[in-house]
Image 1 (tube, rainbow, N blue to C red):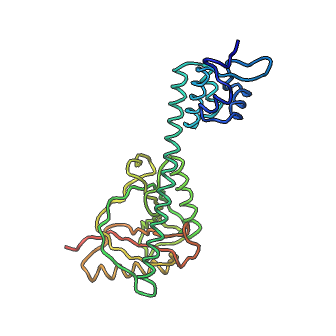
Image 2 (image 1 turned 90 degrees about the vertical axis):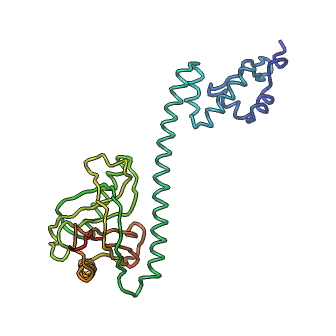
Length: 286
């Protein structure tokens, strides 16, 4: 029978029709993924039917959807639409998970860019000058947090933030703002070796349904922005300036102080380039 005529195509013709290489078709035959309908016994030439062409197109389509050759082989062998549907649903969920992962990476990169821009802008305005003090209206902040009594020091804080980031990532959450330390005792008098400290990382609102998440209330805050690594002397000095401003302008403190790291050790190697904002909730005196 002249199998190369009528509805049969040589391997070269099939490759051209499907826009695929002859080497790939031979490989598919070798692994049992797509065998030609006819092989000439005398010459060994492969011939593909119209149905074979359709199967090659299905293989190409599933490959474009990131299915492995093994997954495609099982789907073709089963010939079941339910089997193919199941594979499609599983691949769809896999793609959604990858999309969420890439979205988290994109968000983190955008935050890094914003932080660097803030540093560059603040360096132009605050280097060799007084601390920048402003009265701001801040919105509610939804955060993952860890609060307990502990030592107040750089190594301890790095460990706390590292553990909290681990909790966020384990629960598929996305950072949505700058890291914070919250002082639940008076900054001017607390014991650095045993104090009530909270570390917090902002997250998206829809994710605040865990026992390690809460809301930092919005409202009026007096803030001071400065550069350099935070030390006991630094934040006591800055906090003192804020108290002085409150006294002069008729405000009183309304809650624990928040130290927010706009640019920190995760972005900068030089400690003098850290950018910190101390925030204290306030209300006007009667």
